[in-house]
Image (cartoon, rainbow, N blue to C red; front, side, top):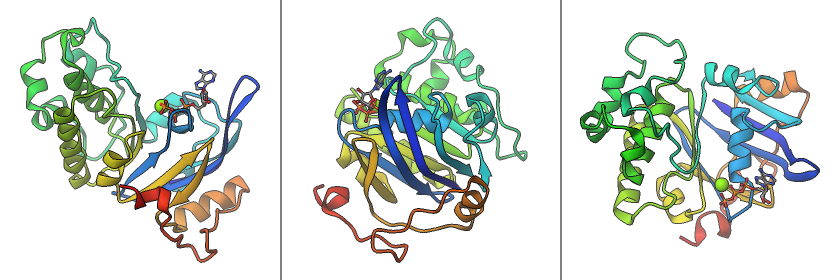
Amino acid sequence: MLSVSDLHGYYGASHVLHGVALEARAGELVALFGRNGAGKTTTLASLAGVVTAPRGSVCVDGEELASLPSYERLRRGLSLVPSGARVFANLSVEENLGVVPPRAVDNGAAWTVERVYHLFPKLGRLRRSAAGNLSGGERQMLAVGRGLMANPKVLLLDEPSEGLAPVVVQAIGGLLRQLKETGLTMVLAEQNHRFALRHADRAFLIEKGSVQHERRRTSSRAARRCSATSGSEPVPGRDGSGTAPAQGGAHGDE
Ligand SMILES: Nc1ncnc2c1ncn2[C@@H]1O[C@H](COP(=O)(O)OP(=O)(O)OP(=O)(O)O)[C@@H](O)[C@H]1O
Ligand SMILES: [Mg+2]
């Protein structure tokens, strides 16, 4: 579904991503976790095309997206929910949900406003309220709902638990489980490694702009197709066999 390799990122002259590689198979929830400043946000922003990555492959369903602008990536199924539950404060809940151009999908698979309200009944009750009046947790739900309205193939979630009370973090965890049940593929960037590892099918630890450990490594057909077109090689597993051993930092310290 999603295959990323050799992703580099810069802010001006500052080189902050050093060949990030990760992969998410269809229906997987993959966590990207690491400390403050490790490069999680830059990685997700580079996948969505919000930050320009001058080098690297971003492949979705065998299609190379790395050279496309953000709106084209959105149209092809990469939808970013930025950190900080950013919403349009002056627009109503419903207007916020309407600002995203949806990707064309088969009838029945599309996200609609009503389907978002079914997932978040509270948002339905607040549909006419200005988004700026919502609580932090409600804003986060709205930000996720807006991400879903694009009908993504892959939903990129940047720190959805950030700054929220434990009970709200729990609710976000429940939401991730519900979304997983719909078959949605997700990449979750989190500083809160306990939260990330509790919900992820597999996890990648990022440090200083490169992925240090991964729970499992596979080379999908889509990844091979992309690497053939982009000219970059698939990154082998740490043991060279395609399956990396579990490392302490990845999930041993929960
Ligand atoms: N707009 C920017 N301009 C310059 N440098 C930046 C900018 N945004 C991030 N950086 C730097 O890039 C590096 C990676 O930052 P990034 O925000 O991707 O980390 P992060 O893992 O998301 O951290 P956090 O957990 O605090 O959200 C850091 O060294 C950071 O200081
Ligand atoms: Mg961040």
